[in-house]
Amino acid sequence: MTKSALEIARAAYQPKLPKAFRGSVKVSEGEPTQSVANQDEIKRIFPNTYGMPIVQFVESNTQINYPAVNVGVILSGGQAPGGHNVISGLFDGLKNLNPDSKLYGFILGPGGLVDHNYMELTTEIIYEYRNTGGFDIIGSGRTKLESEAQFEKGLEIIRELNIKALVIIGGDDSNTNACVLAEYYAAKKANVQVIGCPKTIDGDLKNDQIETSFGFDTACKVYSEVIGNIQRDCNSARKYWHFIKLMGRSASHIALECALQVQPNICIVSEEVEAKNMSLDDVVTYIAKAVAARAAQGHNFGTVLIPEGLIEFIPAMKKLISELNDFLASNAEEFSHIKKSHQRDYIVSKLSKENAEIYASLPEGVARQLTLDRDPHGNVQVSLIETEKLLAEMVGNKLAEWKEQGKYVGKFATQVHFFGYEGRCAAPSNYDADYCYSLGYAASALVINGKTGYMASIRNTTAPAEKWIAGGVPITMMMNMEKRNGEMKPVIQKALVKLDGKPFRTFASKRDDWAINTDYVYPGPIQYFGPTEVCDQPTKTLQLEQSK
Image 1: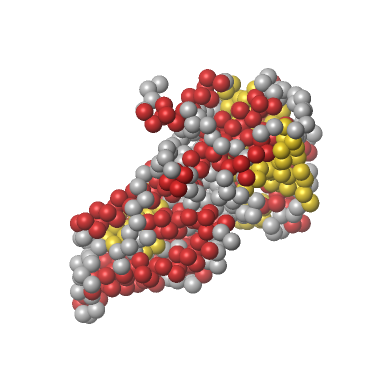
Image 2: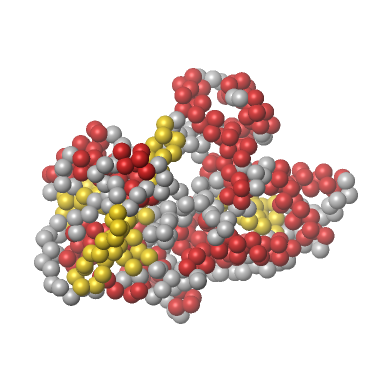
């Protein structure tokens, strides 16, 4: 395998670890926990894994002879920078506790467990992937582990390989599946542990115990670099408004973090749109007013950041999409036989009056995108909706109306962008390289201490790494009940942008100035070698959340 100069240099980087992992690992247990909501239902569904305590690892000088264990690891869902370091940390943690321990990787996600597709991960293989981006060491997949047949099929290979524990590296849905699997094996007394690790560049898997999901830091730095480059071009040519959609379906964490890093003219935050009950026209008018104000100063250029899931947060659109999801979940077969030319009229005839009117008013392209194939959870695939083009077009139409009325005198030309996949497999930043390695180490400690139904946790990460707090959190503690595919299901509660939180309040205090003035910041590419203030800084979001 040919390596670049950076890859060769990064292979030698030794990620930093919390002090707790320097010697033998001692477990400190807290009080029993309960779920964030729907306590009775969650407890009923997870009788064997509910109410467990939060655990913290502390440094110990006591010499412990740990038994050798075989562990399986699965990468689940979309890629995120740092996944290879989670596996490296897990491997090193297990080998450090007992050199005879083995780590098996299941190929292409949870489907590899069901299909018995695996490989043993050796020192030589792990070395090739340390501090690299991507999930290509074993690949990832989106197979959902939810049926008894899948659990039993997985159990066959687990027993054949004498695997003591599975570590599932994934987002909120993958970790929900991990908890379901942990509960099943506990109920069957199968003696198989299941541990989760928090992954998603979207940043919406976090709470008091999980400060951030891995990959968020790197992805935001990658996007901010490119947005900064666009803003430099924007300020050089001075003739385009750039509408930039950013990945992050269910929350606006990426858009907000990038805004804090690059200071664009406009950043829409979906959660605020919903809280203010804004319509699509309200959003368009807000952007158009900023465009007109800058044009009055002779500045016919600017940048607009748009979260991927914006459409779903506009209350009227949210109601429409909810009804569409339920209707298509129940009538998928019938809908598949309707001619494309008749699909719009068919949908209009089946919706409630209010939603039918909204659907009928949408541009043809957006209406069609709302009825495309659902994701595995039965939801509309919002990444396929070209919100950036929709807003650019609608703002243009609004400005044309204002020009006729004498309210606007500028020129309006647009460029549109969507940054998503560009950030998912980037080489992890120093923060993500360290954080992910520590998560893997924590997972190995949870395994060796017999825990199941836990998610690895590393906290206090704005401090130097030796002061990081390592431990584990019961996954049931993060759960609530939500409607999926027309049924109420237990899922990990997504963390949305808090409008009363310091990151949003800091942004809100500055955005009016950014809208009128050209206050762009140019972060540049991720730096891996050099001064700490350049190379090791966590996200602005985390710094603001952790600041006293």
